[in-house]
Image (cartoon, helix red, strand yellow):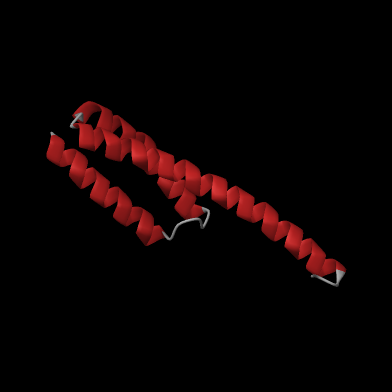
Amino acid sequence: MANTTSAKRAVRQIARRTAVNTARRSRVRTFLRKVEEAVAAGDATAASAALKAAEPELMRAAGKGVFHKNTAARKISRLSRQVKALK
């Protein structure tokens, strides 16, 4: 357990950041799942709309440090390739 005042404060801050990051990661995964489901269903218009919504969300998470920048770019690249293959 934290002894000093600053250590206790750090514990509180970490807990708060963890909650925010968990929510952000969950939100991004939901957007990605919508794209993957539309691709699996073969619906090109829904897939492209879902990708258009997911891309800024994923890059925002990368900017906040939830995902690495290259991870976000890789996910977007792979999804856009799948959506393009539907058309």
